[in-house]
Structures are given as C-alpha cells and as structure tokens.
Image (cartoon, rainbow, N blue to C red; front, top):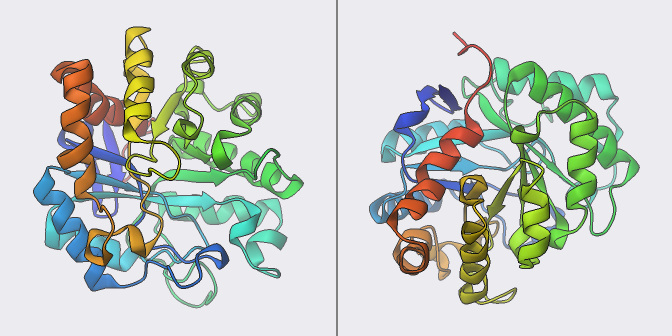
Length: 315
C-alpha cells in the first residue's frame, strides 16, 4: 500500500508517526492578520516537529485557501518530513464573495480536484489559469460544512468530492464546525457511494461525548482528534478521557491524532505550542493512559490505513 505525498508515492509502512491534520499554509477571510504564509517559518516549524518525532504531516489546506505546493515540496525535501497535500473545498465562510469556488459548476469543481490528485496541484488555485500545474499531487480530499447545517453549495461540493474520492481512491477528511453535522456528512458521503472507511471526521473532540463518538465509530469511519492543546475548547485531560473511553470500547483502530495549527500564532516560532506539542506534551500523557501499543496504533498504524491509496499507484 502507498500514500501520495507531495514528493511522490510513499509506501505506507514508511509514514511513521503521523500528524493526521495540520496546516503549513493557510489564508482565509476568517484569519485576517493570522495567516500562515511565511515559507521560512513553515520550514522552521516542520524541523521543530521533526525533532520531536513526527515523520509525516497530512496538510489539509484545500483549494482557495493559500496552498503552496511548491513550498511543501521544498520543505519536505529539506526537512525529510513526508507531507500529504490536500485538494477539495472548505465550508462557505472561508471564501470571499465572488470567489470562483462558490460559483463554479459541478463539472469544474470535480475536474480541478481530479487534476490535483492525478497530475499536480495548481500553484495559485486557478486564480491564474495560465500557470502550469505543480508536480506535487494531492493525496487526500478536504471538505467542510457550516455550523449546524450543510448549505446547498457545501452539499454540491460534498457530492463532487465523493466522485473524486471514488475515482482517485483517496480518503475524505470532513471539517465539522464545532463537531456539528457529523452524521449528516457521513450520510451524504455514504449515500454518494464513498466507502465508510474512506471517511474521516475532523474536530469531533470539540464535543467529547464518548457515547456519541462510539455511535459514529460503529459506522466504520475514522475520527481525527485534532484540537489537542487547545485549552480554549477543553483541557487535554478531557481529550485523554475521551480517547481512553474509545479505546476501552475496542475502537482504537479508528482514531487519528493531529494538531490543526490553522493560525500562524499557533506555531512555536510565533509563541504557540507548535508541532512539537503532539509528541513532547500530549503523547507521553496518552501513553500513561492507554499504553504504548495503542498509542503506536493511533500515531502510525491507523494513519497508514486511513490515507492509503485504493487505486494503482500513479506513474
């Protein structure tokens, strides 16, 4: 089995410790003044994460939010950290009025995801359509829904993402705003024929209710707990309680871990807890709670299974 990284196909058994949800470039109307767009700081942050033990980062910035596939390739080569890039489209609020993503027909939305996955990501997300595609291919699809609802346009993009995922054999990571609409997102993707094990729901640790999580996991999908270190939502002790309950119920094989550092101020180089936090601060506590074997499963084995290509490795 292989995963597609920005430098090419990688055997999944070489992924190692994986941060399953993060951002190395991100620009959005919702992040004015806190955008991630400094290549030197990105490289420094990834080096810092690598020193802590992270060997793969799943970078989940989708189309239209400031992706820089050229920089991701360079940083991956310079640091030795594998980076899985994303295609797809976020929730409506991340796009300013008049952005082409909000107005594009389904065929265009689908075609641009397929290009990202099979040829290479566009260097400016099609704001300058003359430019050639970057050699870096996406290896996962990102989608998003609004708080408490999936808008008409978000549903359209979910349908297109389902088609792209099936065609390219990749997983879909779905942003749930404050852990809402989880079942609705899964229902639509499954209704559009996405295999349930290809569905990964993000931010569900915003609602740390073990019963709700076990109901979702019973469907066969993955959950990525990715607000680790974000005390404004919950202290890590609450997340650890949640993970311990999920593991006790026999669902450890469906849990992924990440940090979702979606603001420059979250980077260690800018005073935040940074990429190092996962391995230096959170994982030692996790090992004490659930042991080395289950911790290894969530950091290494599960991401390898969740992000593996289900089609032939592209040439």
